[in-house]
Image 1 (cartoon, one colour):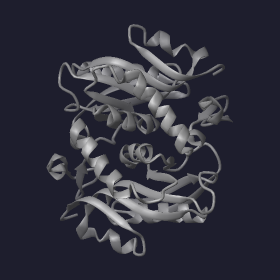
Image 2: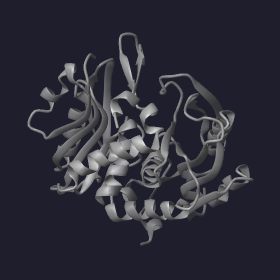
Image 3: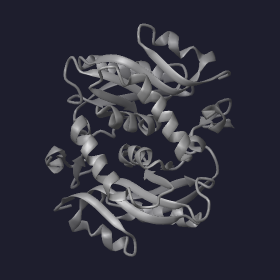
Length: 173
Length: 173
């Protein structure tokens, strides 16, 4: 199945100049959604993974089924003010502004093997911040997985040293 | 497994007077997360379901694996301004303020069988608004599933006529 063709491109969202890659047209198709998750499961089925951490909110759409299938726990990484208990924080610059991510301090114990999941690799800023959070707590990032990679933005460069996997490459920003 | 015991209660979050039921302590445990999803899968495995619609953001943590397991599509219902294409909107009153939910206009075609999923049934306002969105587009709500139900808030009354399922009842608001 050509998953890339199921992704809709919407110009100037959320701000002018950004070509937004809309996954809702892929995931509303049960077969396509299953195939996308299955491709991730296949990639990680032989990797030792304790928990899947995924970035609020679209990252959860893939991270949660992946955690379920791998028998791993699920750790939500969230925008500020959403998590109710004590958190660690990390900030980053994204394509259009800056942002902060939080994770519960008790989400991980040192040595926990973590697979980080998000829907889209753009500049890599949010993934880098998420890695910072995981490592602050002593977690070990065993992989970073994305559905889509905007290859021209070279987000992989920011994630050098980590095992980065993406399923659908798009050219152009 | 006693899933209820894995849920942490945090007083005065997000505002004073609310006892927040924190699911992060359940879902970080891979076995517990799997069991929670499995209980939902078991409940709906024999129901004809085309898509699972789930409410931004915690509803996605259960809705996405459930869609995956059932071979159904996944429809995100989101807070305003998050969905890039044309949407339908519905507003509701929640425990602490008011809110609006959106769904893509092309998320559903008339007659689509929809299972609605969220993490928590409180007053039922957000679920009711989500049902409104689904029905506006001609979708048929075949079930409404929650991980947690705050039984004293009587959210079920607002959802009368729908098949409501919840896994973990809590007393008190």
